[in-house]
Image (tube, rainbow over all chains, first blue to last red; front, side):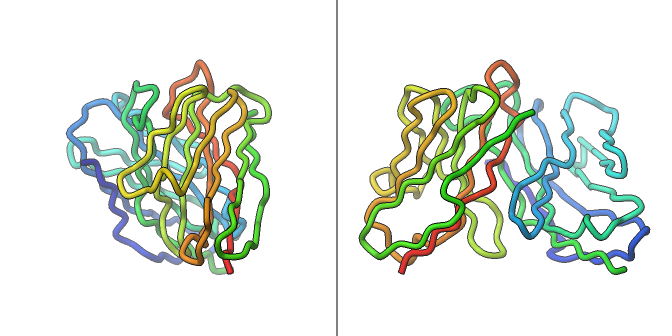
Length: 119
Length: 117
């Protein structure tokens, strides 16, 4: 069974600094997708960044970037120039690729990391 | 865009009553809709997956007779919590994947907070 582990329950960063959130996963699949979702106090899940396992290049979205190490099954999120609005729960998630219907394609979430941003 | 709405956003009900939560994809047709449950300070746990016009697939440990899911159209799925009890109090979130796009991309609704007294 696939699992996603986030070993940091809480993290804190100074405004304008950089922080890295860790995520490891376990799977026997070769083709899959990884995600980082942000859940602010409103509890609306917001997609931050998405990585296809077959792509070697790390995904980036403005101040957000990932370090994807497929062999190590590691998928960390780096937030640069942290802003107060970045404060939220961050969830790492995994899903198998290329499946439709049934229970396939569902997201498996880690337990989350609560990020605080200090002004 | 890909907007998913949920209604109601919060609901309080008495123990023993049934509650229906709607999940709608507003500007796209959803191939599949997913229902998650989230307890305070915990992660999202998948309850079931539903495809339009077919029976939902429930995750292990989720009572299908208690959590009824109907996916009548490509834009609407409903979750009915039957004979609700206080332990059913939780935050319920739906998500939808777009027709014609990889199912890997899911768009989340804003969630429904259920409190059973």
